[in-house]
Image (cartoon, rainbow, N blue to C red; front, side):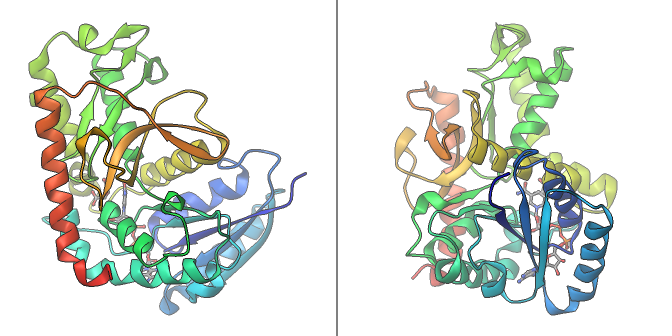
Amino acid sequence: MHAPKRIAVTGAAGQIGYALLFRIASGDLLGPDQPVILHLLDLPRALGALNGIRMELDDCAFPLLQQVVITDDPLTAFRDIDLAILVGAQPRSKGMERKDLLAANANIFAEQGRALNAVARRDVKVLVVGNPANTNALIAMTAAPDLAPSCFSAMIRLDQNRAQAMLAQHLHQPVDRVSQLVVWGNHSPTMYPDYRHAEVDGRPAPLAVGDESWNQEVFIPTVAQRGTAVIEARGLSSAASAANAALDHMRDWVCGSAGRWVSMALPSDGSYGIATGIFFGVPVVCHGGQIERVAGLDINAFAREKLQRAEDELRQERAAVEHLLH
Ligand code: NAD
Ligand code: LMR
């Protein structure tokens, strides 16, 4: 058995938290040989609920779960942690766009970035899930100048999983026959799910699909609006699928993606002509705990327009929180 890993989950008393914690504790994130200590952070008013969650975690008798810390103090939550999944934030309701949450949620990520900077392990891996995730990640990273930018990422994996499932269903193939699918940009309606380089059951996806109008008129808008469709159907934003995507993202980062391309929103390094100073969804492969961008993909005129729209939106989001970036 290895030494335990400390994993912080913020907003742990919320609906994503409830779908996430039991899976982490059962080994779904770091595997069957890796003990874990959970650090659960939420607001003071949610400490009673967190206590109930701790009781339920105890009652599962998970062999890998060594300890559960519950707290409303980010410095306690982030002390010596290996991984952080930052979920705690207000979700949107019907009629809102994710960027409408910026004002409500931005300060949370500034405070938590400072706390990570002060007490987390220097090689901590941080995933931001709370919306608007890309720009919240930028705020957290900026508030943590002593941590490398490579410690930070935002979640676009739910969009990749949605796109993968939709493409597989359209082509009547099992979902695991789809590979090398990319989602570029922002976790927002400007995202660009891109199957130009994907394979489905060994065939190039564009050939398997055939009809380009399906891509532009059905696939891209349906993937981009899926979060809204779930809110309209459930009356609440996605939770189990979001938790699942967070596990996928973190598992690939820590344990490797075995050569598969996966999409992560990372601090832009200027590649693909995307401006720096924003978090942008890009294709990556992971190995040895490191993330490596997939380089050299062709960006045609349609793709360039999509990337530009996402970049423009992210720059606008950045401008709205500029006061938190100094
Ligand atoms: P929820 O309202 O059920 O839970 C949020 C929890 O965060 C609550 O328990 C709340 O008390 C807590 N919280 C609020 N402020 C906090 C703070 N400062 N510190 C610690 N905890 C705090 O919401 P949810 O459905 O779990 O969604 C959480 C966030 O995740 C929302 O912003 C939602 O939009 C986002 N989300 C993102 C994706 C994605 O793909 N990136 C997918 C789904 C949901
Ligand atoms: C999602 O994509 O389901 C989440 O980001 C929730 C939302 O607001 O759409």
